[in-house]
Image (cartoon, rainbow, N blue to C red; front, side, top):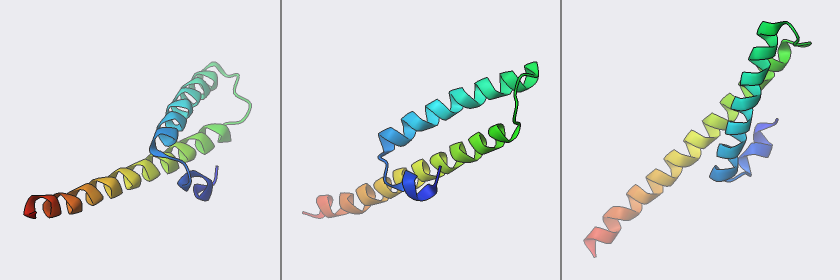
Length: 78
């Protein structure tokens, strides 16, 4: 998954994708322990994709908080 593709998604879509990746990562880890995982690199790819999504989620949430914080003092002054 490319970061550019993820930037276009909304916070809700990113949260949903993060949940799906967490489930998938859990299943991959179980398969690795059981010895049925064909490619260990799938775990690494999944972890990186999850990290990308969580980073974007944090950035988008902080941006929205900053926008609300900047708008709040303007409302109180009026």
